[in-house]
Length: 73
Image (cartoon, rainbow, N blue to C red; front, side):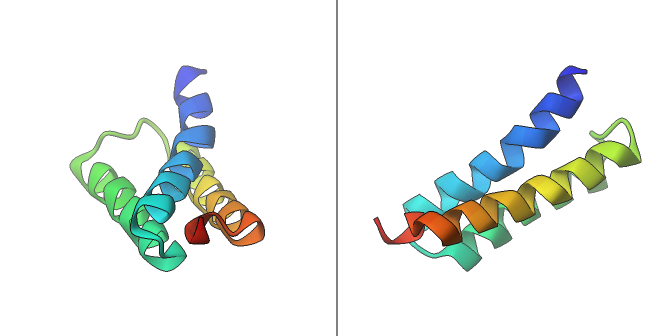
């Protein structure tokens, strides 16, 4: 259960933090995707459902950054 909660919130949080630090929403999304992609490649995921939840969370994080213009603050 813990893995699913982390998969739900952590990628969105990474997109938000990276976008605010770099001040570019596309680069923030790309960096978060690279971090998750490397961890999938290395085999740190327990099921395909976690990868799906991570993907949804990345999209939600991007939409939050875009909606609230967090990359411009």
